[in-house]
Image 1: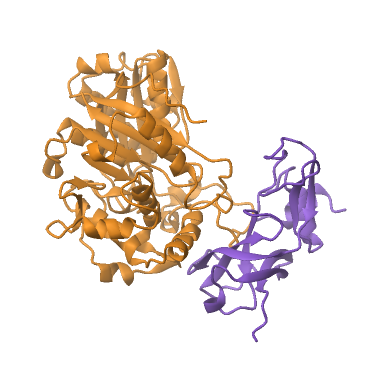
Image 2: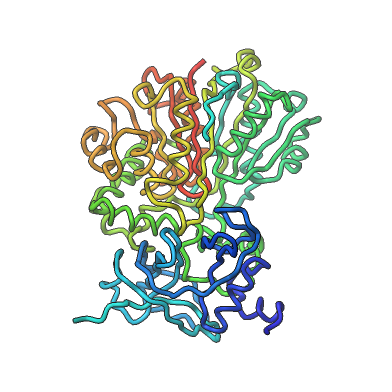
Length: 146
Length: 389
């Protein structure tokens, strides 16, 4: 397993902590790990050391299916330069409501879709992109055009 | 469980308010110098000296720096809460009410910093002061201020309205700023100007976002009894509250119908002696236009998604701004969008001046009550009701 110091170095653009390290280790294996309570089964995000539903501190970062529905969408028309960042603007950022639980959401970009098709309510599935050596979770439209 | 208990009601007061004016450019002055200027100004207006202040509460600079700079003899309470500015007001009000201090100097220095305007980096002092990033910025996020853009898209989707509704907030603010000599942006704008403004993060453009400024506001908060002995008319704090829900991360809140604002409204309404029918002025926070639309709806002027229609119904063509029932203005100083991004201190300062009768050309005739709802959705929604003494 990659050391804590190396993990922090791999994700220098993110604020890593003891509470979210497992989530970022999962990204290295292309697994989207979301915190789940080992006692009551309720999911929560962002990572936190206790379950907001039952106050258990037995939390298991658990892989989600990666399917869900677009809940929020924005398009960046400008952004600071980033190594390995495809700067084709407007750049979509979506918040996806994951199928595992109502209100459980994860935010990332979209790949393989025209911006006109990136709208609230569309079904998506998880995919992964590589940005300057960093695995980045992203979403694709789930439906195939008929 | 939201308490309706409000023992501070009308027992604590603003004794004065002062501003340096707000400037939308990199001025050759420090953030501290603006905050100090505003503090000196308000203390002089109130007739207070270095022996009279025993509480210090601000955003930046730190309280100890402010005390030393002003040579305040001895203080028994001090704090530096995070912005928005009702955090400072609430802390100082509680401290005065509890007797931790009697005369609190309360301030906020607004300053153009690299995190909110990259143009700030052209000033070598500001660039040197910026914290060194540990890695490249992450584009795949709606954390921070971007969260308002994300929920703006949801607002358009859920309510089936267009960006013109956002634009009404920007136009109202700009029209009002024309009568405020200390405002940063005073040139009137039209809906065409709004719709053709540079897109920053769809669906929000440059005119949906508040304007970074250099400047500061300062206040004296003390007991109502002490304020009556000072130079200016006191403005009483009727109620003050903060609000937050269990899920408050930008992408995790329940939705537009349940976030910090609804908590603020329930508490503030229960604790206050008046509500929108009795408010002479309303200050819906406007760091981003959809925040203000939500506040207009949540205080009860209209239903969810109806703020745009409400503003059109109460639009005054003569001033090109909102006058509810021909009378009540929204953000008469121009708000964060046009007066400048004060994180709420400008709204509070304008409310105090209006209720003191010191608002100059934009004085609302006979204003005795003000309803303020600073802050946004997530972990910074706030409310304040003020009444003339």
